[in-house]
Length: 188
Image (tube, rainbow, N blue to C red):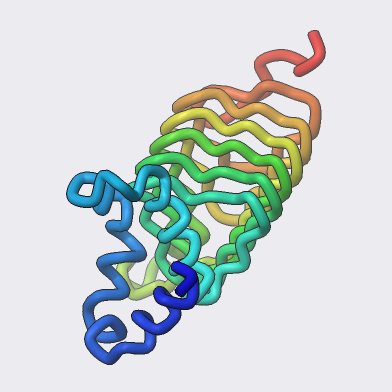
């Protein structure tokens, strides 16, 4: 029996639906500690289960260990893209990742922020603003980058480690800093 068919049967079991599935989706990286024969299969398992929960993940794309994804139905990934270890994707709106995108460890994507424009209401009661995040083809994002709602990162762009992306990034530059600003042209 193929592994894929076996896992499809396991998912349909009531106990997996109740408590086992979240374990496999969010902690599949831990499987390598007690099942050495899996090798790199924990990435495949996480990708498999995220797809089952509604994420659209292209061929050859992987989500590495300890990645946390809220609402996988909002995740769209192209082909041959990678999400690094320990990334946190807080998705209340769409996150679109293009083809051949490499995302380093510790990335945070947040598709919401809080409204604070009504002085007559308490801050916590003012609600949220939503905005999709788009990362186009051929983008490299370094470790511990934060991307906020409504951002588009255009193709052929590099974002340096530790940057905070608050607005649209044009193609062909290396960006870094808080907030992210162009450091140099990519081809120089």
